[in-house]
Length: 442
Ligand code: SF4
Image 1: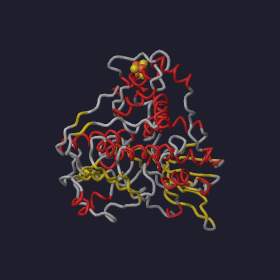
Image 2 (image 1 turned 60 degrees about the horizontal axis):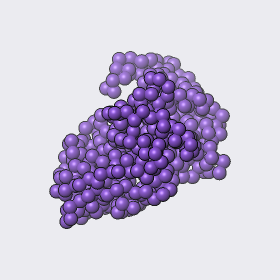
Image 3 (image 1 turned 90 degrees about the horizontal axis):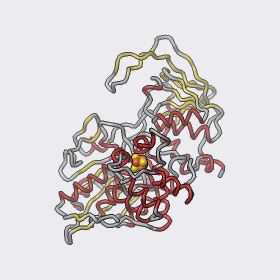
Image 4 (image 1 turned 90 degrees about the vertical axis):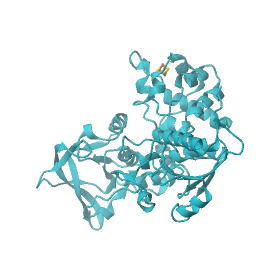
């Protein structure tokens, strides 16, 4: 229970008074920059106005009209970089707390059983569609299709739906029950979610093609790549570390002196978990500098405030073992050279510069490998990601792909995945010949 509390949701919900005061600060801008900055284009002034007038049902419907996963996005979106970063009040006072207001409206929707309004569909136009993967992209797509009258089945290989929202984002930002409740809401729209079913194994492509009119792949990415260093088998996988902290925190072993390899949001989450669950010292090791880190700037500031240390310009080259236990991480000093294929300065190892960072636990969070399913299904790829047309169709007719598995350009994020799901559903609906009459949200 102690551990559960240590990783409980970081910010409390707004009180009725706080929400009213915050909503009243909004200027309800015409052509609002916050809405432009939202990848799903939620009508932000409209939903805030409805909070101000105590029309919480209408506020939730305004959010649902653009984004079925508003509860997740309210918590995990980098609002500082998106809507709140664009708020005109940044210049004068402080931006509207858009994320927290959205959470307020979505909490109301959950408590009151408010469901999105159906998007209309012509009689007889319904199709059978399979969605592979119950992460944010898959759930968004499945919900949007079901709301247009289609018969949607989601195949999810894990035990629980939600993808990274359930398993891969620290509970501080999104507790498991938020992700599960959202998946249940999508089910309530008529979507069937079959968990424990692995596409390509339990259901083959041929079987799916015979049964469904279209297949949408929302398979995310693969496992954490190997570092290829001696002693790697003693390193803990970062995604498994986060998953354990969310689903079985009591059993998660946390060292006293923890080193986390990586510089993205997963590394930041792992370091935070270690610190909050009792590690005395946590060090993030990264082979470039703070300027090249891929985590959000506010996440970097957050982990600094948690007392987490950084060791920049250090490249791991081996795990130091003593009596069968991890005793440290051996690294080489690095200097930055010319830009590499990623456009960032390439780390150049300084010969003979080995040093050891003492640690009794090493965690790696160095990204994820590209989707394996692409090769298995013979799909065309771009930089290892599934290649798709403007309508999200892959090189195989009738097979679509959305979310992180297609993100060859730009940074992957939950909200982009949700938008992919929405746009793919619209494209698929149009292509399958159904006539949509999108309900006006009042
Ligand atoms: Fe309100 Fe800020 Fe958006 Fe303007 S930019 S509508 S003040 S949240």
